[in-house]
Amino acid sequence: MKQKEDVIHDYFNNTNNYLNKDFGITIRKEILNDILDTQVNKNILDIGCGNGGVSLDYGFKNNLYYVDQSKEMLSLAKKMHLIKVLQISASITVA
Image (cartoon, rainbow, N blue to C red; front, top):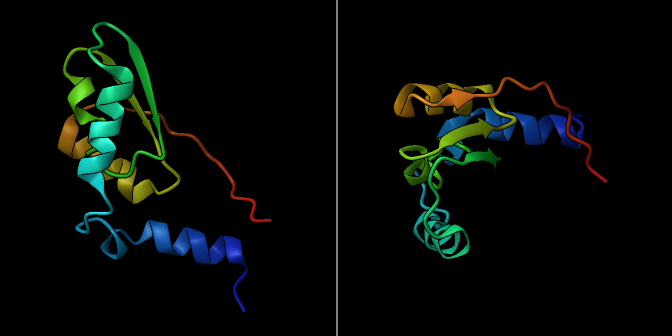
């Protein structure tokens, strides 16, 4: 039987599980815009970025860095948005 960590990793590493599904992306973008407002020439770190769709608008006038546990999502973000992707090895701990 798989451990919870493996199940979570497998789910998020298979982008077909969630990539083309909404998950409230529009609302999350609005919330982010309300919080950050206009930013220029800043370093922005998007942790848990997925394919980068939520924070992408900030990448045009700022340095935008993406972090995600899924190598597939980081690869998509890098290809789609031509942004800097931080390669970070991380482990997941489930309580």
